[in-house]
Amino acid sequence: MITLLYNCYNQYFMRLLIQAIIDLVFSIAMLLMTMYIILLTYSLGSWELPYVPTMRKARKVLKGYLHITKHDKVLDLGSGLGRMVLFFSQYPIEVTGIEQRWYLYLVSKMRLFFHFFKKAKTHFVKGDFFKQSLKGYTIIYAFHIPRLIAKLAPVLEPQLQKGQVLISYKFPYPFSPKHFTEEKLQDAPDSFFYIYRRK
Image (cartoon, rainbow, N blue to C red; front, side, top):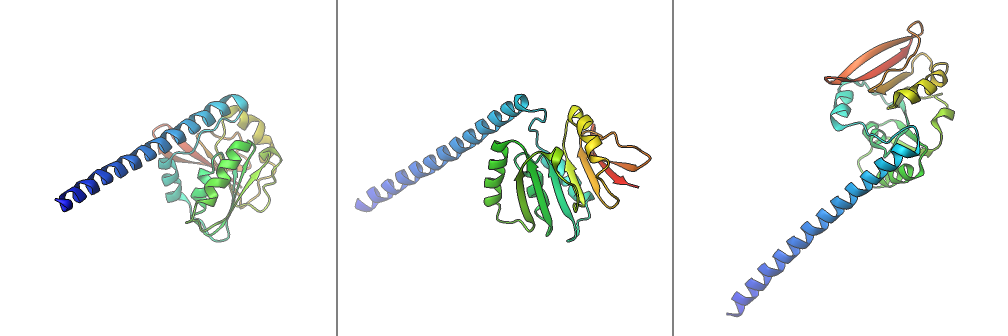
């Protein structure tokens, strides 16, 4: 009888524990989703570069295209929550993400702290990428909307040198065809990476 009661108590306790874990996971998921919506909503109205991340499928396509070597050095212009910086951190290289918005910068730093499998030397910098030098970087990644591209292109074009690559997701840059080659890498029926190299 005592054994039966003990077994019933253990089963009841396990059900309570499992339910508590499920409730905790659900609560954390809802909190993260709420924070994501708040970040997205706030960024849409706070600056001309809304926070929209590069999706997993697109990152997978880009990974198949890239030929990263240990000599590469990557810069993400507007790193958001750091997805692309963490994507590039799987390679044994140096990666820098620059982000102007303090709340995205802080979340990126926290994500980096808990990202245990990175191979790269990884940095996040809070700053204005209009003032960021491209010197020393071999790959520059950008996901910008057209009205920002129109302002940024004249800043980037004279800085980009032979041997550097600019990868723009979704939207092309109006670089001079006389000085740059443009290659399209398709990741969806109506979506491309635009890859620019100085001739």
